[in-house]
Image (tube, rainbow, N blue to C red; front, side):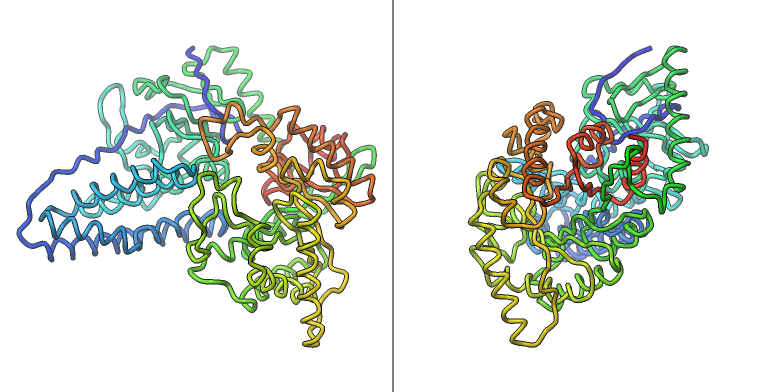
Length: 559
């Protein structure tokens, strides 16, 4: 037995035969062409075909996993349609009289190097995106099939006993995929009936591929590095996506134990539907509100299907991120009203726009920052550009007449910020009264606790608002001084750190001292290894992804 330790990025146990996906050959020959215009036309046709493929992929992902999981491929389409990208490719063809394949590869390398050299980890991540979309265009130009067949089986090269075999899933069997890396588009097109799990040499827990693996319910491990061995193809392996452990040719004891744990997990999942309609309550009678996080109105279907008791975090910034110009008050009002009406009496907590840091929008015209995570973002934009903020607040207030809406302010660091935000809210209320427009006069206001400053000032903040919601993703990075977008810091950015847990405890205690409720809406809310801890701390609410609702309810009911 050979044991490999990687980084577990998607929980679950997979047992099966390994198929090694060899890195695709992207060699491109440079050729001198006689007709640059014809070659530019050839590039444009290939780009349009690639855009159409991404549109189909986006629709497939949205249909199976929800709109929020498909947004990456919208970004990929926009990248291909970007005038700067196309202009560079066509300029190279025209000036150097080179073939389109070579021009696309050259421009992709230039753009990737430019992104990789930027200080922002978000921009650095775009290096992989531009390489992914450019490979798609090159495949079309070279007459290659899309990276995935219509039936979902991978059509790349696999190493079989040291020789190359085309098509790793042609025999219809299911396998554990080992690869140097997988592009998001490749991961999204995997057929879950033929793929048991994923192991890659590269990657991180926050990569698009890891997020997609979690969405698809595939156990996944990244970062095995030099332990990646193509000769593992055809061997039996066990992977544990929670611990990051990989066992190649497991001994009998290891195999038996993993089979037992896998059977337990499958039995557990089969029981989850029976929890629908059951109260989220511990055996001792402690009641916890179990809500869901969403990014757009279309996500409500998943919220209701998974029996969440409300929406604890509506990330309203996606109404801005998915547009090329400012969303109007009417556009936002329609979105908020739709969610409120579909949720009925259930609470809908809407976070005001959290633009900045890793969420950039061109039409905001934000200045370049060396460290945007500590920069001009979220409430800071709203308070310094109140004309933007008030449009959103008016839309939220108007929608509050149609359901149980609450407003939540992100990135708060001081009492004055809350008071300034409430002042602008009162101005919006006054305007609507003057227009004889209905809204909920007693709409609740809360703040996200995601900075150490807000934890320290929690007693004072609690006197100003109706509730707290702890954003553990940002709270972890600010408490531990670790950029959560930087893969090399994963070993230091431990969300289970006693410092982070103490911050959470201090926040809950301050909220309860002042008679308001406190929830968690960050990733830790769905961490089942911490659920008992949160219950002992007296948490009032947990808001998680819709698919995490029933597993979390099960743990709470057994506490």
